Image (cartoon, rainbow, N blue to C red; front, side, top):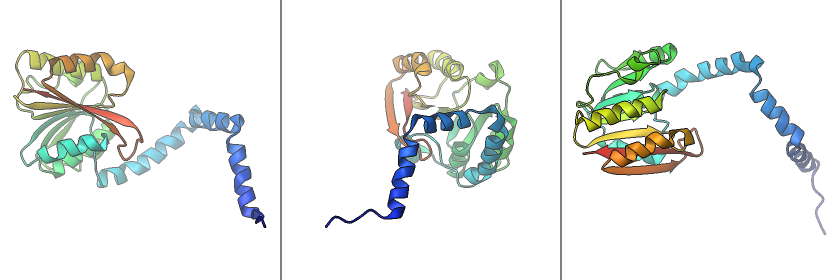
Amino acid sequence: MTEKPSRNRLARLARLVRLSHPSAWRFLLLTATDPALDKLYALLRDERLPKILDAPYPRYAIAAVEHVAPRVRPGYRILEWGAGSSTLWFARKGASVLSIEHDPRWQRLTGVRLPDTSVVLQRELGPEYWRPVESIKEFELIAIDGRCRHECAGFVLEQVRARRHRAGMTLLFDDSQRTRYRECLEALAAAADWMWTYSGTSGVVLDKTTTLFRFD
């Protein structure tokens, strides 16, 4: 004898049917993009920021973090565009981080949690942002994970071509799956001695790509 579906199960099936209707997805899209809700979404993000930074972990593809982690040690020098969880994670492993950040809020929230050996500099978007130092020779790892990524990559390439970099320096380029970065990624690949590409979850984003380059 076939068992009759329970009332709760029928109700759940009915909800699923309603969610599959195009009008439900249209409502979800309109709600997610409604400018009137921007302040609410910003408030929710602000409330989550301290929790994220109190338990920091890089938002790169997890396999890329596992590639980098064994190399990070006390005294390891890092230049980073885009401050946040990765900055604090590097610093807690003993690295000395120079992080460049355009958002005063992120600069403040990240900077107050750093030891004296690391710093977040707030820079307006422009040449002072993507050219923060005269030479990258002191840095063993450079992470591009902020704004103006084409310009930041171009600055690193100029330094590499002028031999103003440390032999064996690693460049990490996050979100390399985005088609708008294809041109600068191809230029980096042409100049690099080694390249690794890692795709998968970051723990926050289900599917993303992080690419690493090594310059000898």
